[in-house]
Image 1: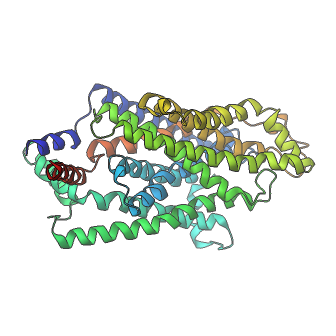
Image 2: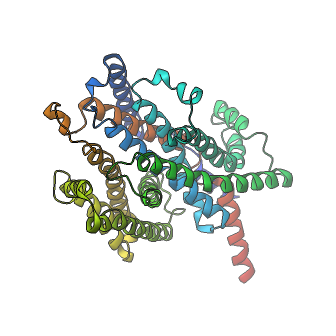
Length: 438
């Protein structure tokens, strides 16, 4: 009983300390600044941005693609781990699901921000064209939000029932909320069977939905027939990149939560070792598709494609390109092959480098291509030949990133980030095994 009480005190949601409060207030303020900047953009028009006829997508679509990619970790990755019954997943799977839900929600909001006239969004449904990948994107993103929410919510039912009792005296209001969320969970065999089957069905649904989401996102680019995007490699290229971004984000968040909540007994060096190997594998796979995307065309490219590649390899974007490729991909992949770099602190640094690199990688996918259309840029202001986000764009983008972190922060405050019931069951099984052996 004492062990169970200790586990419950360790894993039950708790109030933030001073740093947690400062963190939350900072995210709220950044989000408000982003909202104000977007409202001003709605009033004055997109003239406040640096997007023009050529760079018509810019940072907003880069940010959208990043959110979609990051959501991959809690969809396909978690679904596969659940279906294959990988025991080591328990302490990290819910964190991955929280990241996914926050990311896919913000992906939907970001694509609306990119619309110059969000009031016309209803037209995407009223005048949808099935031959357009944009229509598929409009369908798949809400579907992914719903399925991701269910995959997070259904496994929480036993924990909500536990928290209802835990907070009965400490906070009657919270106890009542958890009681409603638990859907009268009693832990009966019938309930467990329904829950297990439901989670299995949701996980099975999420794998194709996650793959379709990444592929449709890639097709949005490749079907435009533009230099730099006109590639049959784009679908696999986006999926492999999503693995890298998602696992990098998971490692970064796991490290912070482990340190903040003192979860060293639950999220161990073993888990970091597993995640490190996983990230290294994901990086090497993505490197392979980068070779397909950049190196092979360099040998066979036509004039227009060579112009695009020259801009990336030796031109205006070369410094950023090589820093992203080596700093956010190649170096982490190699270092993670060594066990000393698969420990918490090195993993956090490498994971953060991968996440930052992944964001800028999406920027490089979008911007250089838009600045090299089929027709030469002529008869337009010199500023149209170049693009770098305006202050408004940065504020709005920072606001969306802060909102995603705020969603994660709120969920972490009220949802047990490590499954309580499952952890207790596993520890009981472990103790039974030890007593049987002795």
